[in-house]
Length: 137
Image (cartoon, rainbow, N blue to C red; front, side):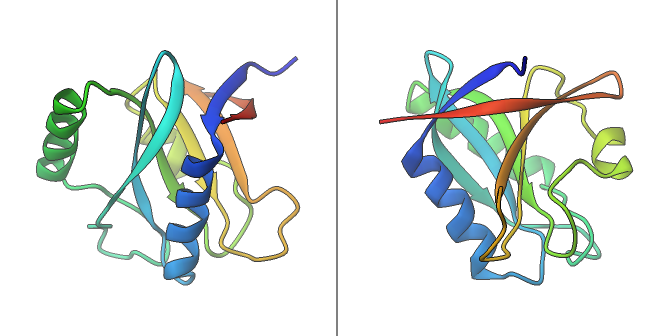
C-alpha cells in the first residue's frame, strides 16, 4: 500500500497552472506546509542550461524560499517539476539529483488530458516509491 500524502487542492492547482504556463519547458519550485500537509507551492525560476529537458533551482533562490518559509511558519516539504515530454515518473537524472531524502518529489505533466497529471514520489538512496496523494480542504 502506498504511503499517504496530504495536500491542499489549491496547491495542486498551483502546480498544474505553473506547468501549463510554459508547457514546453520544465517548471520547478518548492512545496511547503504545516502539520505534514502541503499547503502551498512556491514557483522558482528554472536555471538549467537546457530547461526543455532538465530543471535546476539556483542555490540562492532555495535559500530565499527557505527564509520565506521560516517567516511564514511553514516547513519545507517537497520539490516539484514538470516533464513536458514524457511520463511524469522520475527520470534517472531525477533520481540521481534527489539530494533531499525527506522531501517529497512531485512530477507534473502539462498535457491537458493526462489521466494522472500530478504524481508524488519518495526518492531515497536511489529507491523510488510512489505516494498516494490525498487532497484536503
